[in-house]
Length: 187
Image (cartoon, rainbow, N blue to C red; front, side):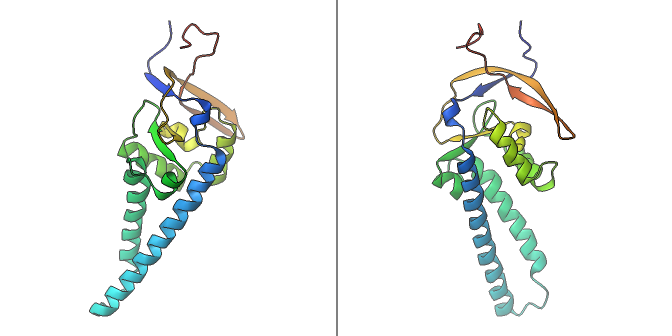
C-alpha cells in the first residue's frame, strides 16, 4: 500500500532534464531580451512624452509597463508553446510535475519565489547542481520541471512530501518519487 494523498506525478529520463549550462544560457539570453525590450520601451516613452509635450515624469508609467512586460514574458509566454527566446534557442520547455503545461498561477508563483525569496539566484543554481530531477528550488516548490523541448514522461509515480535540513534551512515540498529498479512499481 502506497500513500497517494498528494496524487501522482510524471518523471522523465535523466537526459531530458535541462542541464546546468542550458539553464544559465536561458537566464543570460532572456535577461538580454528583457533589457533590450526595456530600453525600447523607455526610448518610446521618452519620444512620446516629448512629442506630445507631457510634463510629468515617465518613470512611473515605465515601471508599470516594464513590470507588466516582464510578467507577460516570464509567465504566459514561457509556459506557452511559443516559449521565451532563451527557451526556444536552447530547445527547452517548462512542464508541471503532474504533466502538461503549468498554470498561470503556478508560473507566477515560480517567478515570485525568485523575486521575493526565500531563495536567491545562487542558492537556486547550487540546488540545481545536486538535484537528481534537474529542479531548482523554485521548480521544487512550484511543481515544475524544465526539460528538452518535445520530451515525454517515461512514467508516473506517487508524490510524497520530501524534507531536507541543512545550512540553517528546513525545506519540505512535494516530490515525485521515482520507483527504484528493484521496486514492484518500476515500469
